[in-house]
Amino acid sequence: MPGLSHVTKMFSIVDCKITALTADPVGGTPVYASSSVDVPGIKSLAISGNMQSKTLRGDNTLLDTSAYIDGVTGAAEHALLSLDALAVMLGGTVTDSGTTPAQKSVWDLTNLSAPSYFKIEGVTPPNGSSLIGGDVHVVLHKVQLSKFPELGFAGDDYRIPKFEVSAVPLASNGKWLSITFNETAVAIP
Image (cartoon, rainbow, N blue to C red; front, side):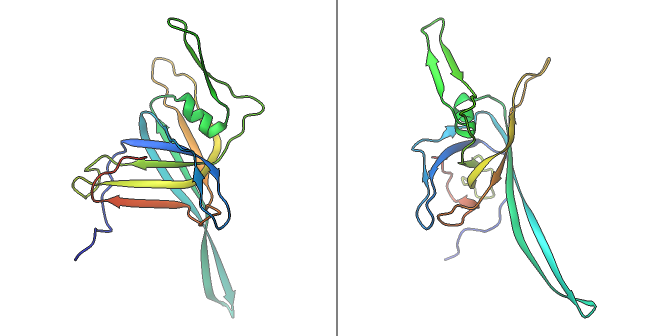
C-alpha cells in the first residue's frame, strides 16, 4: 500500500500558536504549558538555518569536507498585537482590571521580565498543501527571541508586529524542527 507523498506545495499560513516550554530534562520528555497562545492575524512564518563547513587540505589537494548545522532561526509577521503572546515571549503577566466602560488589560515589561523558551507552530490552510483536504504543520520545538519584537505605530497605515527567534535543540530528544504532512487537516492544539 503506497504511503503519503513526501512532496507537497506550501501555500499560505492560516494559524500560528506559541506555547511556553516549562521543562526540558536531558533524556526525559519536554513539558509545555497546558494551553497555547494564538499569534493573531499571522501573515508569515519563515524558517532558515546556518551551516558551517570545514575543509581538510593536505598534499596540495582537498582531502575532505564536513558540514554541520550551526543554528536555526525563524521570523514571524502578524497583523494583530497580542498581550498574551508578549507575556509568553518576554515574560510577565497580563493584568485585567475595571468594569465596563473602563476595563483595562495591561502587560508590563519590567526589570524582572525575561525572555523564556517556547514552541512555535504554524499551519497551512486545508488544501494549502498538495494533499486535498490536508495541511502542513511546521514546529520549532525550543526557541527564544533573538531580538526585541517590532512594536509601535505607523503613520496613516497599519503597524505589522514582527518577531525573530533562534532555535536550540531540545535537551530531552535533540529535536530542532519538525514538518508534518497531514492527509486530513488538523488544528494546532
